[in-house]
Amino acid sequence: MNDLSEKERLSRAFDGKPVDRKPVICPGGMMNAAIVDVMTETGHVLPDAHSDDLLMSLLAEDIRRLTGFENLGVPFCMTIEPGALGSEVDLGSLSCEPKIRAEAFGSVREVEYRDIPAALRGGRVETLWNAAARLSGKDGDVPVIGSISGPVSTAASIVDPMVFLKELRKDGANAHRVMSYVTDFLIEYAKGLLESGVYAVSIADPTATGEILGPRLFDEYAVHYINRVVDAIHDAGGRAIVHICGNMGSVWRLIPSFRADAISADAMVSLKKLKADFPQIVTMGNLSTYTLEFASPSAVAEKAAGIAGGSIDIAAPACGLSTSSSIENLRAFTGTVKDAGPFGAAG
Image 1 (cartoon, one colour):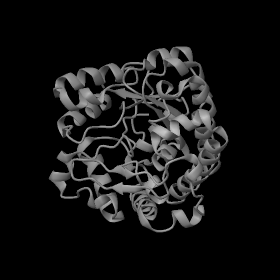
Image 2 (image 1 turned 180 degrees about the horizontal axis):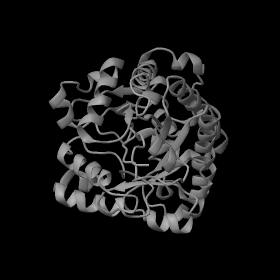
Image 3 (image 1 turned 90 degrees about the vertical axis):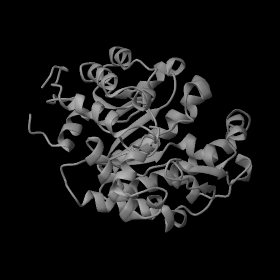
């Protein structure tokens, strides 16, 4: 098994099969490694690459080459979906990620239900699909991961988020109508990525936390609608990763309800306990992004060794990386995992 390709290693990890060592990935989207160090070294920079499929693909290749992550991941933000659905987006700068400047609607009652194929045509959606196609045509042994925003986070990016979260409780009928619309959009968006050749789709839903929603709404909105996207990805022949931010304690019993190929968790979550309680879950994570930004390379390597030898199936950052993280720290992470055997011993 020592000659496994990066894609085969990740595939075997998804399936719970033996591997020579753990894959180490950074899927893009919320969790991307488009750090300033990489961009200044290569000249392929943001915000230009957010709207140019060639630059987007070149930057994804730069990230893999310079950091050691074992995948190609696009895009580098979470604003493509809300932008396509009407929200106003600020594309940021070299060091600042894009953000929503103004949500399209003030309430779930005000949402205008656009034709989904029309919303997907042109603009940054097609930029992403074209970048994914460029990357997928390069090397079949390297997994290309397309990252999308989860349904709750996307809905909270087209409707004023404070109003939206209140309306999940107070206006469930209209909230579900918005969530169903957003989910239908995300399904078609993800299918376009798969048709462009991506191997897996990563769904990051940082607004859908147990701390924000509580167990009942987490089940009613997050689990239900994320699983609709996951099922569509599987039906189209792809793999699905789900990332949930924050402390999972209040929704612990619901985590196995997700039908994803892997569950990615934040740094405060014990993936050892998650694996012990639910052995069927493929766990992914969860090296602290604070450590990756501020610790020394040796300290990063020490933490990475624990991940390489622990009960985590796929090594990855715990959440969104700071753009000021260093190449040295990211390479300390990936290099330590790569030098470990299947049980974390030096390879």
